[in-house]
Amino acid sequence: MQDVRIRIGIAAILSGAAFFTIEGALAAFIWWLVISHPLEVLKRIRVVFPIIIMIVFFSIIMEITGGGGLAYSIRMIVILLIGMWVYCEHRKGEFLHLGTWLFGDRGGFELGMLAEMGMQSLDILSSDFLQIRQAQELKGVRWGVRSLIPTGIILVHGTLRRADDAAELMAVRGYTRGGTFCPEFTTTTRDILESLFALCMVIISFVIASEFFILYR
Amino acid sequence: MRIVLDNVRATRGEWSLSASGTIHKGINLINGPVGSGKSTLALMLAGLFSPASGHIRREEISSLMISFQNPEYHITGSTLEEECYSWGLDPCSVLPSVNLTGKKTDSPLRLSRGELKMLHLALVLAGHYDLLILDEPFSSLDCSGKERICRSLSERSQGITVIFTHEQTTFPRVDRIWEIQGGALLDRGNLPEALGHWYYAPKVIKKLISSGKTPKNITPADLLEVACRT
Image (cartoon, rainbow over all chains, first blue to last red; front, side, top):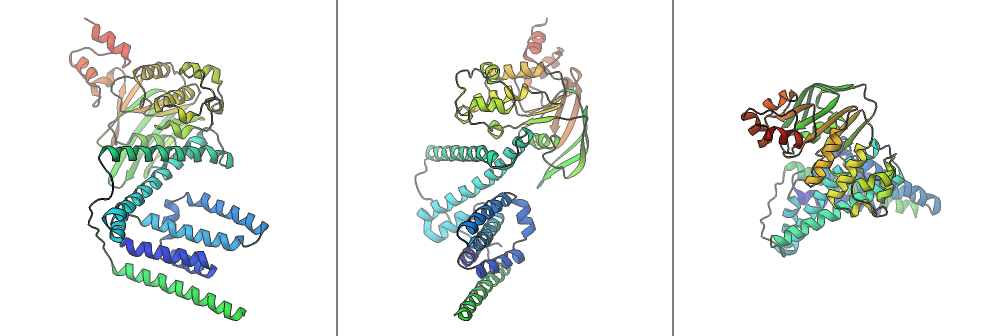
């Protein structure tokens, strides 16, 4: 999908639908299966699997303690998959275009720049995570909760250090706030068709949900 | 004990690296400019990255270790003491050797990058591995740190040691030189013969060779000896 405005809009609508109802989550999941090239997404972002395991783990605890864990895990996993799709489709610099288009040269520029830096951090985190795991395996450390703690500490420490370096560099270069930028977007027929498909799925999911409640009454 | 690279090719977008040859026991230096694919090749030798085509055979190698450029990746202990134990080593013998006595209870992440790199290399070099791969071991080190690591590396006699570096000043004693040039790994041969074919050789070595003085090896002592030769 070329147009970041449509992509983020679809992601927001589908995530909202998935968050509020299980039917919405299923509709969003079907959309994700049809449109997002799921195998490529899962292959590229393998870190998704430990996150899914973590969600399932907390869902089981919820199910045991108060119920609703299954629905929670389905909805959260679908939201996660939609997020992964947004991440895979991201092209460098487009959040700067989006932010400036939405909120202008000051707040919008800064928001877009922050989003870009966040995406860059995610890329680095992903490669750091892989190398930390490789280093731990060679050291004979088994993958588990105990190895997760040092991994998390190293990742957070590295991210904070890079953020600190970036902030210092920007200050040295004289950055204070905002910037001048002319946002540009390319919208294709495919973008429009995919967004219409997403809207249809969300509407259908709400219709099914409301029908269910009418029958239930 | 050897590593056979059989028409190995790694690609990333338009960038590619091809490698063929056999890496034997001893200290192998793989030299090449930044971005030439040294880290990618290091990962492939360690079996952590699959080549797009070709095969890498590690023969009679039962234990291997790779030291990444970034020493933080290897940390699993919350204190220097724990970190030493995590490598199966006694902190009382390792920490003084890298001037970190009295910091046993400090977090490894509180050390400077250079201190952490020294500690990490000391821990790695204390181990016995059939294959030891060091990716840019001299980065972040000062001159005395580089010399200390070079002395330690020069003493290694067991297994295959592969050093990937773009270092131009301080080297350990090496047995064979390889370099990555024009997207291919080239075997320059054993020392001292390899020195004459070494494209990315440091200026001082090139100058010595052009004046007819070929050093036996590339350690600072060898270079000094040949430079002072009349």
